[in-house]
Image (tube, rainbow, N blue to C red; front, side, top):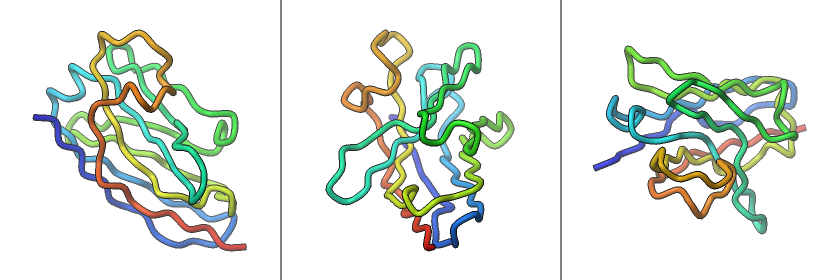
Length: 126
């Protein structure tokens, strides 16, 4: 069974940084592509940072490119999302997600993800 446990959210002022963590298992990383989505009130869930786990290639939405960095710590079996230069528009619930590697649709398609964490809130104030 795939379990994803997020942590690291919180409140920060604009320009600050946060690091989100998603604890998973080694088998999850070996069998699934993974990443982070976010959802603000009244908005659709959007992919912000995704990784092709077989080769480590990462992909970012235009809104976070250059500010967010996705990484996998093999020793801790944890997926990290380092978020720098945070903006108020980054405020949202952030979710870690995973889907089988066999799926070939766009990584940013939320509906194709089978496994989700419980979410962690990120709030950025002016």
